[in-house]
Length: 121
Image (cartoon, rainbow, N blue to C red; front, side, top):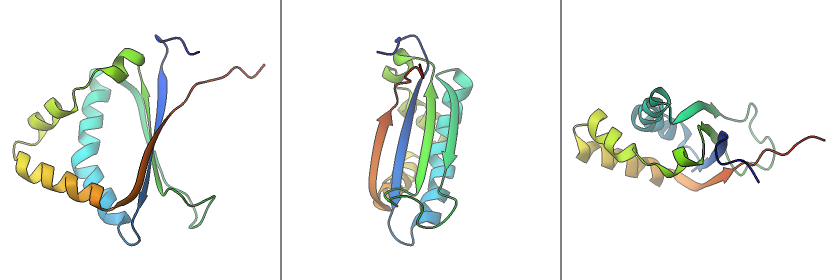
């Protein structure tokens, strides 16, 4: 088992509805990415990456966006500050919540995978 004091990477997979990819990404960048960046700056995260398949139809095609977040440790995963950060960054909470609801309406599926590093030898 991973040492609880070591960094933990979690992959957040998203599959958007047909034709909704651009709107989802616009709302993600507008409303969610700034919250993630605040947590990176505060030290809760070590790294954030966003990726999409290079070509249409790569792999099983069960996702079209993956966000990789490397948390500092398990304690960082258990601490939750997103709501507080959102209140600070988005004073118009009504609009923020409506846009976040819309962002999730654009999805067909979403799931998270916590990775456990294994030794090669």
